[in-house]
Length: 363
Image (spheres, rainbow, N blue to C red):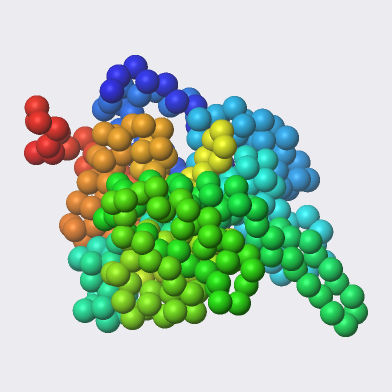
C-alpha cells in the first residue's frame, strides 16, 4: 500500500461533531502517514452551522464536494435552538435527509460489538451480552418513510412501498458481508401481516439461495426485537427494511454500554457516508469530553470500503488496545475519565506502535 490518494469531504457538523471528527482525522492522518496514503480533505458545512452561514442546512457547495469525493465523513447534526422551536421551517436534520437523497444512500450499516472489558457497562446481564458481535443492514431509501402521505382532519396514512430491486441490492450486500463474517444471516420482516414484507421474503430467499455457505434465518420483527435482548449473540448479520432497521438498530445500540462506541456507514451508488451513531450532544459541545471512538471506527469502515484494509485493521487493533487499557472517556470510566482529545491521541499513537512481520501478522 503506497502512493495512494483519496479525497474525503469532511462534514464536522454541530455540537460535539467538530471535536470527535478532529480526533478521527488525527487517527486517519496518522495511519495515512504510516502507509503513505494521501488524504485530500475538503471541509464543508451541514446542519445548524450551515443554516447560520448560508440559510440552508445543505448548501450546494457541500453537495458538489460530496458527489466528487471518494467518501464523506460526518460528525453530528442537530441544535436545541431548532429542537425547541416547533415553528422553524428550516431545520438541521433536513440537511442529512437531503444528503442521503443526493448521494442515493440506500444501505445503512451499523456494527454492534460488546468488548470484553466493557461488558459490565451494558444494561443487559453479562452472561447474556457476552460474545455479542453483529451488524444490521437497514434499507435506507424506501418503505414507509418515503411512501405517499395522505392526511385529513380525521385520518392519515403512510404508504409502505418497496420495489424488488431495492430489496435485492441490500440483501446482496448483507449476504456478501455474512460470507466475510460468521456466515449467518437473518431477515427481519412482518411477512405474516404485510404485503411489502412478503416481497422482502421472496426476494431475500432468491438472493440467499445463491450463497450456499450461509446459514439463513427469517424472523418476524417482534420476535427479533425480543431476541436482541435475551440472546443477542445468536445474530451475525441482520438485514431489514427502513422502519424496522431504524427501530432495531437503536435498540441494539444500547447493548454495548455506550452509544459512543458505535460507528455506521451509509452506502451509495457512487460514494458513501460514514458517521457515528450518536447525535450532536450539545450539552457536551466544546468541553472535550465526548467519546471519539465511534467516529474513529467510522473512519475504519471508510478505509475498509476504500480497499485500504491494512490501514483499517490497524485502527481496529489500536481501538481494541486502548479500550483494554481502560483509557476511556467519562461515559465508560467514572473513576479516571480521559478527555476526547486524550483518547484520540492514544489511539493515534497506538496505530504507530503496530507493526507486521513478513507473514502479515501484527507483532
